[in-house]
Length: 307
Image 1 (cartoon, rainbow, N blue to C red):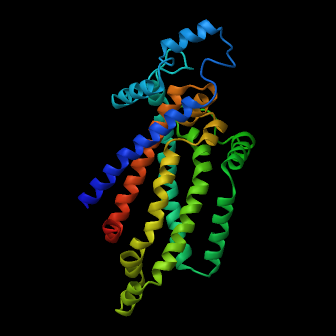
Image 2 (tube, rainbow, N blue to C red; image 1 turned 90 degrees about the vertical axis):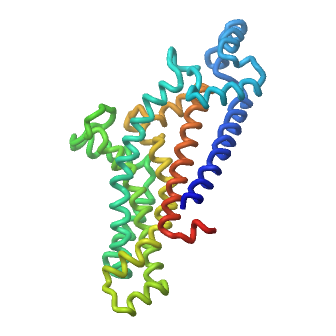
Image 3 (cartoon, rainbow, N blue to C red; image 1 turned 120 degrees about the horizontal axis):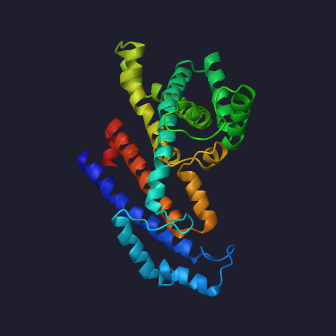
């Protein structure tokens, strides 16, 4: 298991380097820049600003300087947010997105897996058909529809929870954004769990366990559930990364000052440093979540480690 983990970690490092390199040159080679339109600065002022931030240097030199800064945890100054470094902005926004994302995962995982197991054990029955319809409905609703509807009903009409904003330590501000994200994630987990558990219950080793006289509960928990969790864990890797790094739609609708809003702001303002910092953090979290999912899959099924 240790050798498998070391191989996965070794493969993640060059992957992150490729992500950073491609993103750096694609962003810099795109037309325009942080000091062009719509600011319409005089040419001399623009030249001075570019010289101050090192944007007049060759691309290769800028790239090497950026890599050197990243290794020290320095993503450079923001080009659009006055008197702030990208590291400060990430430290300010990322904990908010992580709080939201972890809350979503802690709710969606047991709900989705539990509904999937219940549907699989009642395959073909009323409960299975009902849960299948509910999960399909949950998957069909995009977040840009769910978020305004929840805000309108529970925030404006009923007045149970705040419509938007963020106050640390007050869970009521998490209710609507968490509910918006839990619905599709739990629905996806439920469908994956149901399908994989139904397939696992028909495997030969499960039939053998039943033939030996083992009880239904023991057959499910000891022989069927573990392999059935593999597709769920595989989905959770990229899904967790996407949720933990912030949802652009949810953060915009509910006015949450998370990392997703800074990414949008940096892209609109052509803030090279801010966009690159967010991409680097997003890439790192995505690789870490996928690494955790791979290790968990290797623990659930030893055959994965030897492929």
